[in-house]
Length: 118
Image (spheres, helix red, strand yellow):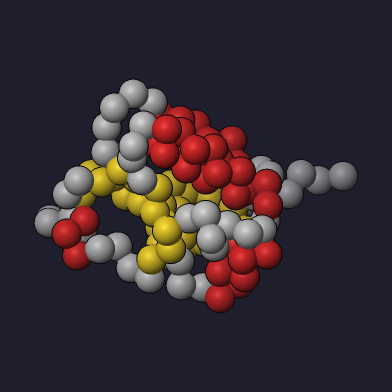
């Protein structure tokens, strides 16, 4: 039995008053832990709001969404926000099926004031 290979990358950058986390690849049970570790660091203590950009995600399931839910709860308790950038219909559908389209603030693009100025 061979182990399934998954492609996943998370890149973060400070932009304006937020940190943008750009995700690429599959967001599932195999990649949930690396995402959770990244978001745990960003949500510990005081800091910036977090924007998670899912436009580069090619697959998502419920286990991959758990780190986003945990980050949302942690940030809300600190008076901070988690916003999700999503344009792919299948990702929007998974969020809706899980009831998270009502929980998360969904955006179609990174807000102009939050884009990097490089």
